[in-house]
Length: 366
Image (cartoon, rainbow, N blue to C red; front, side):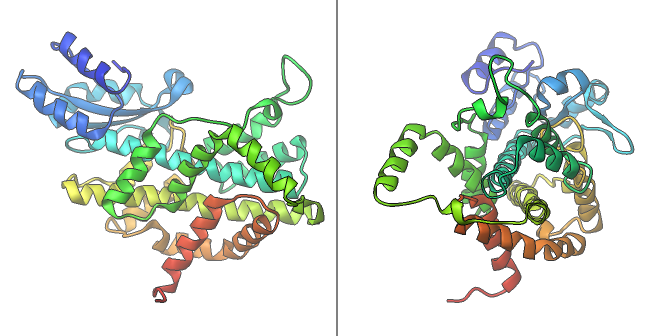
């Protein structure tokens, strides 16, 4: 039974104390509840679930944590309910003790925030600098989804560019207000990054972007002030080769998408060490290959990286991923510089590049 996080979960446990109850939740609440129901002779699982509407039909990714005994009671059911991926099996595993299942789901959401922010930045550069039409954008993202960027988020991004407004003229994407909210999981992720002293700039930038997007009225007024003060349209002077731009953005997007996943894995690794959960990062990458929002083709390669080295300190220093990043870093730098010179905010790409440069130097000047 899935219920809204917070007090409703406690109320559900109290009301249905003779039944198994679960919900996506702040991981410490899960640990508190597991101890509380143990006094009643009950077993408790806190299970992260990712899949949304599609997951309800085709199976979600399931991240159960808590009582291993409880997991074994319902393992057969979860194996059948979960998304099924050829050659990888059901997208479910026993994550670990305590609140580890909910913690992993929380980080999963943080990775998704980072991923969505980076895709939005890629769109901005292509649309504002390259002047790509909706058809051009659809074709570019659809082509990207055939290669190393193949993922659920790239797929649906390609799709949205082809959807017309059913209640008016033009495309639906142009009618969406540039203002969004959030459910709080990315905020928890960023708070945990600070608590664990783990750098997660890609994920953090996505949270800041959401904060700014919520200030729609303030942004509109600020734009008027800057324009009246003489700030002109610096995009008017930009002339680029569209095909080269698409090529560079693809390379840059792949490099920074890896950052979002790597930073999420770093957070899971740090919390696992702190709590003694002994989480298997490669197995988490496996169960994210189907059903969930961050499913992507390179998750298989992430799993293999952790299979090669379970103690890998950072996904970016895996030899295969390191080489791919190096091969793409020139295009990545060109896109960041182009965006800055065009007055386009690409905080995710820019901060991710700073993160990479700090790592690759080996020594911080000071």
